[in-house]
Length: 227
Image 1 (cartoon, rainbow, N blue to C red):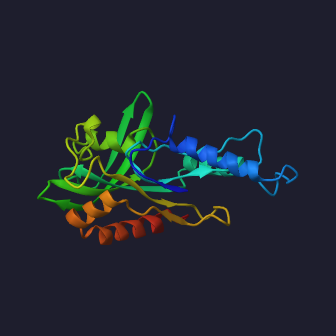
Image 2: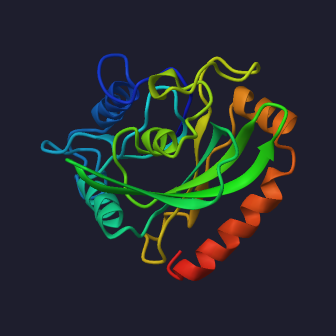
Image 3: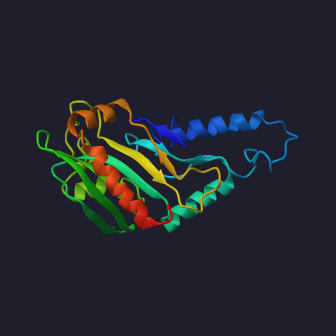
């Protein structure tokens, strides 16, 4: 797991994917050739380490990658079966109320659950806890815009200028909850710390957000049963 900052793409040249692949290749090269692949799963001729899910260039937060084929297959199965709880925090324009956003297009049906945590009338913006039910490219950004509440500063989706404290839109992959059937060395929860822009904006505009988020997440994890 890494905590990805804004401004770095996940795929392509000079990306997170490239950096992680290079680092893993170096680790693998440092393992003596006589070492068995069973005890060191990095030594694999057919599997290339890489990121396991999408994240846009200016989106921050939890990004998962795997060093082994078994790990990648397990994570992919969890995504297919929707047993991983993926929660993002984002700042949108206007007063977006809690709702389920469903969009159907040529790529199929995409679903995002939105929980309103706090509304700041002074900047006419809301802090939203997003839960991804499906996971498609730009899903949260598109769904917010389709609901009439684009992310503040997301110019691609008519979000206008960013907050005075920021250089870009604020969308942070905050928490990942893993099912009870997870591997023994896998924690039940991964939480990504905030980068300075997000931390400053939350403190300045949405100071009471954490209590609301905690109540929602407690209810969610109880209802899910397998987290």
